[in-house]
Length: 442
Image 1 (spheres, rainbow, N blue to C red):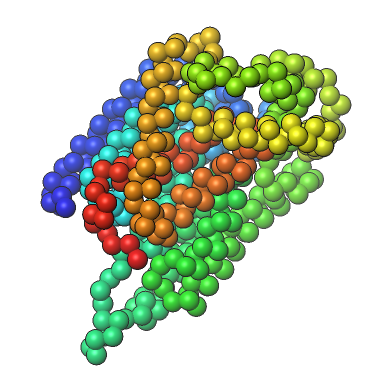
Image 2: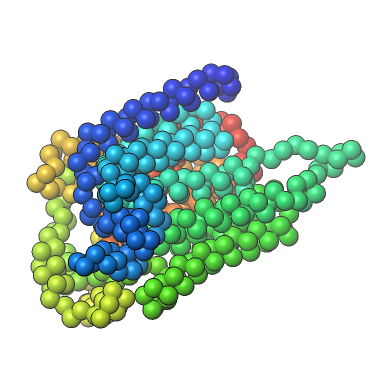
């Protein structure tokens, strides 16, 4: 066990190092932050200028939208200047801070659950992870989504399921947590529900993760069964209220009860269209993963632009859903095969070969990510008894959530970003000898 004073010295030094690593990468790719591939910047600027979560029309009028989930654009809107422009330097600062927070939370989770040595290795892996570094240079949700999932997992480990405290009554019997701290379990539940709600507002995909975590609260922590059940109810109510408020806003502004976004139909159609299916039918499986070529969506985009459009973004999203479902029903065997392809794409360690990527970069990133994935599997296998602990449930739930959702909807490796800190902890625990965990798992 590291001496407390030395631990703080290492922690401060590590935070400075993470700031330098993250900051230097973001500064080197500052031009990438000027782009707005997913319209988060324009929504944030519209929100800051008009107070409407929407898109600015040609006449300068804001049109309400639910095209993107609300959390990230809302957060960006606080950094919009008086000129109505979102400066890239503010986005860079936000992403660096979120990256440092993610590394710090990963370190503390590994320290609490495993050991100081595991914590430092896990933090180092998250610091230099190429996927997270690359995503921090783009105005997209991967950076904030990863930070939020780390916060949820940290609260689960540190507050909902802390190390047991040896406290007994005068007669020597163990003290029941229901008698020790009557309000703490409910306060922890409220905070946890709030954090989990933020993940859903960041990415609707996380509602599946939430649905897997909330029932598990019945089996987590030192509280008695009555308070565990109450905790499940509190977290569930907060989630329902959060999704309900966003839905009510969309009913008011769009006239439709959109609980997630009006982008789901497009992402389902992008993953299930004839052009993509044909490319899978024609391509062969190669034995060189570093030469994997991405699908060319030119034909799909042409057909998508020529489609029969809806009257508004909600009905237009419905049209996309119907087109995707038609493709799936007409080619069910190809749909099943494409699900496997998308799941493989999500976990594929090598970036696809594109003209702007050198073979050296592809090999370095691919070899690194292959190593982390293999070490994570070996770490879990080596300490399987400890990985059956409730602290591991958010990890397995996240893996299942991402795999299931993105095997049906569009998938690529960047969408696994939220699970990277979890994989880092799994890989880092391989450094401990079997049976030498500092925390005894029960």
